[in-house]
Image 1 (cartoon, rainbow, N blue to C red):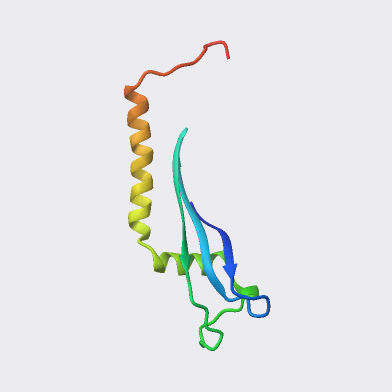
Image 2 (image 1 turned 135 degrees about the vertical axis):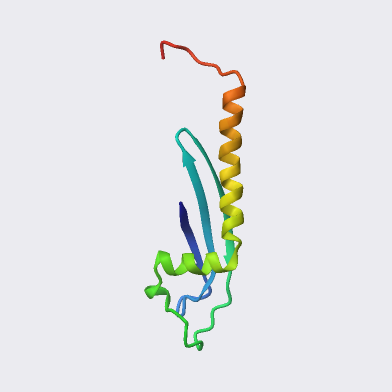
Length: 100
């Protein structure tokens, strides 16, 4: 699941987004992994495609992030971490108490 965790903006009047902080997480049963990052932007209020801060949605900012990063590589890396955890769990000994 992709999520935008925070936005950084340049000033109070314009609130041009200068950074989007994101997280990608994948869970498969009891095994999970995630990665976090951020993307920097240079807002230009004179650009015809500029979107005012108050009109931004999660989906719009997520599109910006996906355009700025290698989405497929990040998803593959996180999935590989989950698969490695699953494989390790199958081959390693575990601890626990049956009455808890």
